[in-house]
Image 1 (cartoon, rainbow, N blue to C red):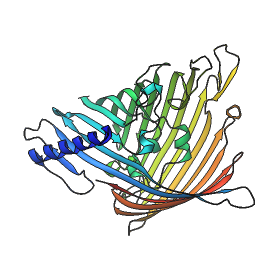
Image 2: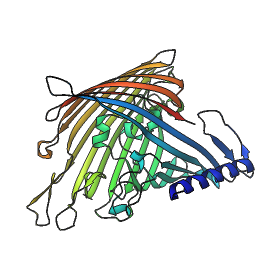
Image 3: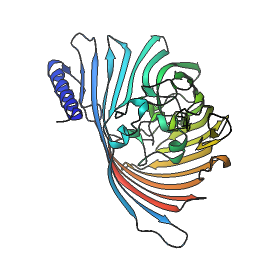
Image 4: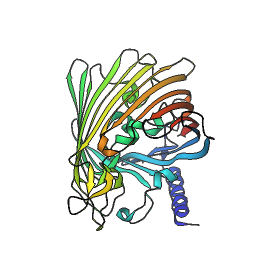
Length: 402
């Protein structure tokens, strides 16, 4: 039995032992497999495993004929999630571990060549009225599509805008606040200071720090069941709900090609090229009576787009993924819990990056058996590129989380 198997076995034993010794409550499917509170109410733990299985086929097209399709079965995500409170309900925590290859890949000298199991490990302290202090590793307050959990997507996966421009997770602190502006208007303000090199980095801080600010405005009050952070209108909002967000992110002396994401911009002498990278997001969500519309705009720029050697003149060949993107997706949920979704994405990189511009249209269908907790999905994408082959992508799969 390897170390990973031993760790998983011990984890399961601990969970079962604790569950038997405590008062179990709220075990309804979709609310956590184990959900209990200590007898003295000093802490709580909710345990929720998750699986996303997928099949996909891709046909490349050279303008005359399609190639033989590439076929792939994979476990896209397999995760263990724990959350609850400790000592007081005002001190919450979240731990999420990834076990799939896609989650743990990315070992490098900067994380001591170890698998990247930890997705989230964060505490959240409601220290004063509507103020919260977050500390640890978790998602930065970036574009709405990224902050929505992958368990609550209405298509098989996120858009190309997200894959090329998102700022994902990092280690640091965040301050969050909610303000009632009068009437139904609500404002949410979020600010973070993080290491700037992504999750599970142990050999840092190499460049500078990353600063992220986000403002969200809700003109018609809050969504049902936090629906602004769950795709599709599964709650069938009885009145129009909307959320509009703006994020500004600057990564000082960034050493990765996509802010805190992408590859390290290495130099021939073993050093790393550094440049300030800014990322801006504008996004919005509107829902009403089964209809849902999401729009996003992303823009990334850098002081120097083409990485340079230590002499300040010779180019290393690495480039910052600077450019802009838009993404729109609309959907309607029928009364039989089948949802139809249409998405359009356009990526426009700056010429200096030598990266390929992309356009993609995706048609999707989802059958929600128990909301997002148990669903079957499929989508079909048509993609065009200015320098790579066009392609057609078909994907289908299921999502199961307790």
